[in-house]
Image 1 (tube, rainbow, N blue to C red):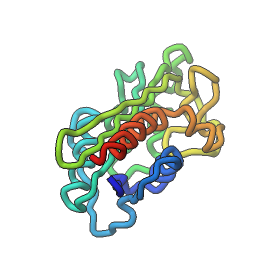
Image 2 (cartoon, helix red, strand yellow; image 1 turned 90 degrees about the vertical axis):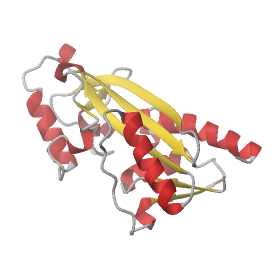
Image 3 (cartoon, rainbow, N blue to C red; image 1 turned 90 degrees about the horizontal axis):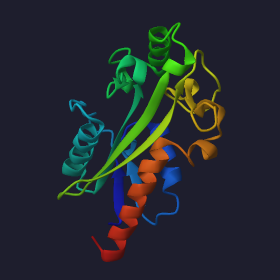
Amino acid sequence: MEKIIIATGNKDKFSEIKEIWKNIDIDISWLGQYPEMESVEETASTLKGNALLKAKYSYERLGYPSVADDTGLFVEYLNGSPGVYSSRYAGEEATYEDNVDKLLLELKGVPHEKRKAEFRCAVCLYKGDEPVFTEGVVPGFITEKRKGNEGFGYDPVFQLASSGKTFATMSPEEKNSISHRYISFKKMGTIIKNFKKVGK
Protein backbone atom coordinates (compact mmCIF):
# COMPACT_ATOMS: atom_id res chain seq x y z
CA MET A 1 0.00 0.00 0.00
CA GLU A 2 1.42 3.33 -1.10
CA LYS A 3 -1.74 5.39 -0.65
CA ILE A 4 -4.64 5.32 1.78
CA ILE A 5 -7.87 7.27 1.81
CA ILE A 6 -9.18 8.43 5.16
CA ALA A 7 -12.89 8.09 4.46
CA THR A 8 -14.11 11.19 6.23
CA GLY A 9 -15.24 14.63 5.16
CA ASN A 10 -14.55 16.02 8.65
CA LYS A 11 -11.44 18.21 8.47
CA ASP A 12 -10.98 18.23 12.27
CA LYS A 13 -10.98 14.45 12.38
CA PHE A 14 -8.61 14.15 9.41
CA SER A 15 -6.14 16.56 11.06
CA GLU A 16 -6.09 14.39 14.20
CA ILE A 17 -5.56 11.19 12.23
CA LYS A 18 -2.80 12.69 10.09
CA GLU A 19 -0.97 13.78 13.24
CA ILE A 20 -1.30 10.31 14.78
CA TRP A 21 0.11 8.75 11.58
CA LYS A 22 2.85 11.30 10.98
CA ASN A 23 5.55 8.61 11.25
CA ILE A 24 3.97 6.28 8.69
CA ASP A 25 5.59 6.56 5.27
CA ILE A 26 2.43 6.52 3.17
CA ASP A 27 0.44 8.98 1.07
CA ILE A 28 -2.68 9.91 3.06
CA SER A 29 -5.69 11.59 1.44
CA TRP A 30 -9.18 12.36 2.67
CA LEU A 31 -12.62 12.80 1.15
CA GLY A 32 -12.34 16.58 1.27
CA GLN A 33 -10.02 16.17 -1.75
CA TYR A 34 -12.73 14.32 -3.69
CA PRO A 35 -15.75 16.65 -3.93
CA GLU A 36 -17.59 14.15 -6.13
CA MET A 37 -17.85 11.74 -3.19
CA GLU A 38 -21.18 11.77 -1.38
CA SER A 39 -21.51 11.17 2.35
CA VAL A 40 -22.52 7.66 3.39
CA GLU A 41 -25.69 7.14 5.36
CA GLU A 42 -24.67 5.53 8.64
CA THR A 43 -27.37 2.88 8.87
CA ALA A 44 -25.53 0.23 10.91
CA SER A 45 -26.40 -0.41 14.55
CA THR A 46 -22.76 -0.54 15.70
CA LEU A 47 -19.66 1.64 15.38
CA LYS A 48 -17.82 -1.17 13.56
CA GLY A 49 -20.69 -1.54 11.10
CA ASN A 50 -20.72 2.15 10.25
CA ALA A 51 -16.93 2.25 9.90
CA LEU A 52 -17.12 -0.65 7.42
CA LEU A 53 -19.86 1.06 5.40
CA LYS A 54 -17.74 4.18 4.98
CA ALA A 55 -14.44 2.41 4.24
CA LYS A 56 -16.02 0.05 1.70
CA TYR A 57 -17.83 2.91 -0.08
CA SER A 58 -14.57 4.85 -0.42
CA TYR A 59 -12.63 1.83 -1.67
CA GLU A 60 -15.25 0.84 -4.25
CA ARG A 61 -15.44 4.34 -5.74
CA LEU A 62 -11.85 5.54 -5.51
CA GLY A 63 -9.97 2.24 -5.82
CA TYR A 64 -7.55 2.84 -2.95
CA PRO A 65 -7.34 1.07 0.43
CA SER A 66 -9.58 3.08 2.70
CA VAL A 67 -9.78 3.61 6.42
CA ALA A 68 -12.85 4.89 8.21
CA ASP A 69 -13.86 5.26 11.79
CA ASP A 70 -17.05 5.72 13.70
CA THR A 71 -16.86 7.33 17.08
CA GLY A 72 -19.51 7.45 19.74
CA LEU A 73 -20.05 8.85 23.21
CA PHE A 74 -21.82 6.30 25.40
CA VAL A 75 -23.39 7.70 28.58
CA GLU A 76 -24.31 5.15 31.24
CA TYR A 77 -27.23 7.15 32.71
CA LEU A 78 -28.75 7.47 29.21
CA ASN A 79 -28.49 3.71 28.55
CA GLY A 80 -25.61 4.21 26.14
CA SER A 81 -26.97 7.22 24.26
CA PRO A 82 -26.03 9.09 22.16
CA GLY A 83 -23.89 6.13 21.00
CA VAL A 84 -23.91 5.58 17.24
CA TYR A 85 -26.04 8.72 16.89
CA SER A 86 -23.46 10.97 18.55
CA SER A 87 -22.80 13.18 15.51
CA ARG A 88 -26.53 13.69 14.89
CA TYR A 89 -27.87 13.48 18.44
CA ALA A 90 -29.81 16.74 18.12
CA GLY A 91 -30.86 16.07 14.50
CA GLU A 92 -29.41 15.33 11.06
CA GLU A 93 -28.17 18.90 10.61
CA ALA A 94 -27.02 19.35 14.22
CA THR A 95 -23.90 21.36 15.00
CA TYR A 96 -21.39 20.46 17.71
CA GLU A 97 -23.07 23.06 19.92
CA ASP A 98 -26.53 21.59 19.33
CA ASN A 99 -25.42 18.12 20.35
CA VAL A 100 -23.68 19.31 23.51
CA ASP A 101 -26.68 21.43 24.48
CA LYS A 102 -29.01 18.45 24.16
CA LEU A 103 -26.69 16.20 26.19
CA LEU A 104 -26.37 18.71 29.03
CA LEU A 105 -30.13 19.17 29.07
CA GLU A 106 -30.70 15.40 29.26
CA LEU A 107 -28.33 15.20 32.23
CA LYS A 108 -29.53 18.32 34.05
CA GLY A 109 -29.58 17.66 37.80
CA VAL A 110 -27.91 14.24 37.51
CA PRO A 111 -25.14 13.92 40.14
CA HIS A 112 -21.50 13.47 39.10
CA GLU A 113 -21.26 9.82 40.10
CA LYS A 114 -24.09 8.96 37.70
CA ARG A 115 -22.60 10.83 34.74
CA LYS A 116 -20.18 8.07 33.73
CA ALA A 117 -19.42 7.90 30.02
CA GLU A 118 -17.07 6.32 27.50
CA PHE A 119 -15.72 7.58 24.23
CA ARG A 120 -15.34 4.65 21.82
CA CYS A 121 -13.74 4.66 18.40
CA ALA A 122 -13.93 1.76 15.93
CA VAL A 123 -11.63 1.87 12.90
CA CYS A 124 -11.96 -0.22 9.74
CA LEU A 125 -9.40 -0.80 6.98
CA TYR A 126 -10.96 -2.07 3.74
CA LYS A 127 -8.96 -2.96 0.63
CA GLY A 128 -11.20 -5.37 -1.21
CA ASP A 129 -10.79 -8.42 0.99
CA GLU A 130 -11.51 -9.18 4.65
CA PRO A 131 -11.96 -5.93 6.63
CA VAL A 132 -9.60 -5.24 9.53
CA PHE A 133 -10.84 -3.54 12.71
CA THR A 134 -9.29 -1.86 15.73
CA GLU A 135 -10.93 -0.14 18.70
CA GLY A 136 -10.08 2.45 21.33
CA VAL A 137 -11.99 3.21 24.54
CA VAL A 138 -11.50 6.06 27.05
CA PRO A 139 -13.61 6.23 30.26
CA GLY A 140 -14.76 9.45 31.87
CA PHE A 141 -17.67 11.60 33.02
CA ILE A 142 -19.90 14.27 31.52
CA THR A 143 -19.39 17.66 33.16
CA GLU A 144 -22.27 19.96 34.11
CA LYS A 145 -20.99 22.74 31.86
CA ARG A 146 -18.45 23.27 29.10
CA LYS A 147 -14.78 23.51 30.06
CA GLY A 148 -12.08 24.54 27.59
CA ASN A 149 -11.89 25.79 24.02
CA GLU A 150 -9.78 23.17 22.26
CA GLY A 151 -10.95 20.16 20.27
CA PHE A 152 -14.41 19.70 18.82
CA GLY A 153 -17.64 17.76 19.29
CA TYR A 154 -18.25 16.68 22.89
CA ASP A 155 -14.68 17.54 23.98
CA PRO A 156 -15.75 20.47 26.24
CA VAL A 157 -17.99 18.24 28.39
CA PHE A 158 -16.05 14.94 28.42
CA GLN A 159 -13.91 14.75 31.56
CA LEU A 160 -11.32 11.98 31.65
CA ALA A 161 -11.50 9.59 34.58
CA SER A 162 -7.69 9.44 34.68
CA SER A 163 -6.85 13.16 34.92
CA GLY A 164 -10.07 15.05 35.60
CA LYS A 165 -9.41 17.23 32.55
CA THR A 166 -11.81 17.66 29.67
CA PHE A 167 -10.44 17.03 26.18
CA ALA A 168 -11.16 20.69 25.41
CA THR A 169 -8.70 21.87 28.07
CA MET A 170 -5.87 19.87 26.49
CA SER A 171 -3.54 20.86 23.69
CA PRO A 172 -4.00 18.90 20.46
CA GLU A 173 -0.73 17.11 21.21
CA GLU A 174 -1.86 16.06 24.68
CA LYS A 175 -5.25 14.87 23.48
CA ASN A 176 -3.72 12.99 20.55
CA SER A 177 -1.52 11.03 22.92
CA ILE A 178 -4.37 9.52 24.97
CA SER A 179 -7.69 9.77 23.10
CA HIS A 180 -9.93 6.94 21.94
CA ARG A 181 -9.14 7.94 18.34
CA TYR A 182 -5.41 7.88 19.10
CA ILE A 183 -5.64 4.40 20.61
CA SER A 184 -7.60 2.90 17.72
CA PHE A 185 -5.67 4.64 14.92
CA LYS A 186 -2.33 3.87 16.58
CA LYS A 187 -3.26 0.18 16.51
CA MET A 188 -4.33 0.49 12.86
CA GLY A 189 -1.11 2.31 12.01
CA THR A 190 0.89 -0.66 13.29
CA ILE A 191 -1.19 -3.01 11.14
CA ILE A 192 -0.63 -0.82 8.05
CA LYS A 193 3.13 -0.72 8.67
CA ASN A 194 3.13 -4.52 8.77
CA PHE A 195 1.15 -4.69 5.52
CA LYS A 196 3.74 -2.41 3.91
CA LYS A 197 6.58 -4.68 5.04
CA VAL A 198 5.08 -7.68 3.29
CA GLY A 199 3.79 -5.70 0.30
CA LYS A 200 0.08 -6.27 0.88
